[in-house]
Length: 482
Image 1 (cartoon, helix red, strand yellow):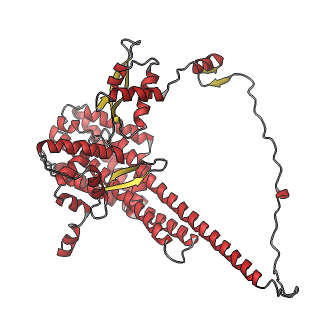
Image 2: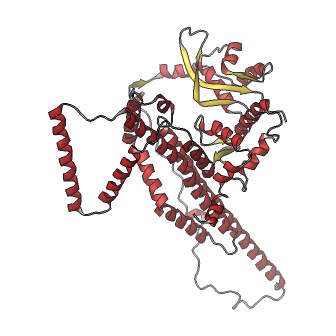
Image 3: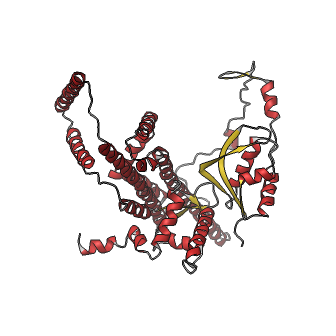
């Protein structure tokens, strides 16, 4: 690499993060928040509360360390000079969310590569190179005769393998070293795949910024904005990264592929020769879910681009309406100036073609739609749905969330934070599991409370001895003092 290339590379967000004086604190916190329980986006209030707790922990050993506030740290990490986090608004929510940028993902990926390993997988990587090279040569040509010849060679090789196994009664088995080596390579590839999503999403963000920049240029028209949007979208889909992403998405959304992958991972986890350190890494078992979550994030970026386009077009439409109103006002002013000396009737105005006129009476009258009447009882797949079932729905308990909030506040008067079990002990539920779910709803409606996505606890209701319910872990908090 040349000097200028290295100099430019040192200014990339990933390198700036690693060179930061607070790199240890930043990376450890972001890993705890986003990676320990995999999350792609975290609401601003929750992330700020997590950072405040983390700073308190660090200051116990170093009181003078990290003197700034959590809000200022987050503001710094998301500004243009740093670019460690991205702040955006999700449709339908009033609170902003934070996401990792591609630079931060690359920094995590590089740190993961520095971890000490028991052995370096050289044999599996060389085998993957050989297999990849053969695959390139096989699918680089569309010659049907050549492809048939290769498939015949594969068939002969497979048949020879079958005959050998039948003759000897044994099948080739990989050694524990080879199995662990390949499993570790799968984990590395999966980690790299997840980090690549940030770059794909940022491409969509780049298109959105270009749309906004074109809108402020003088003389821009709605047609040019739409044309640029469609051209940019087509260009992205036709690019190497776009083709790979959409092919990946088609592969990911296949139910058959998902089921086969889950079954294969479950069987691999049960192999006694696989190292316990590799099994303890949840990346592969959570891979499909995390990839689907990342895909939803990318699709949400696409929807934000479309929403941005709609806002631009609406703004352009309002601008045109204002121009028409200004033109009408100018016409009225000119008419007032000549009202004392009107022009001759013959040359007052001339229309080359009469416009089409539409009146209210040209619309069709409203007609009552056809009604559908049920002849018998409403049926479901497993039987009839009658009055008895409706009465059971009517008798369901009415959960008052306001009363549940008062119970939570009563418990928080004694402690800064309380868990769900503490609230249930103080106020035993009278309406069963429905009331417990009401507490979960209360916690999810305020940022000062926390509902875990991947951590569950078991609760036992007073009048259902021996029966336990599994619900998300909930932590209620008083919130920050203004």
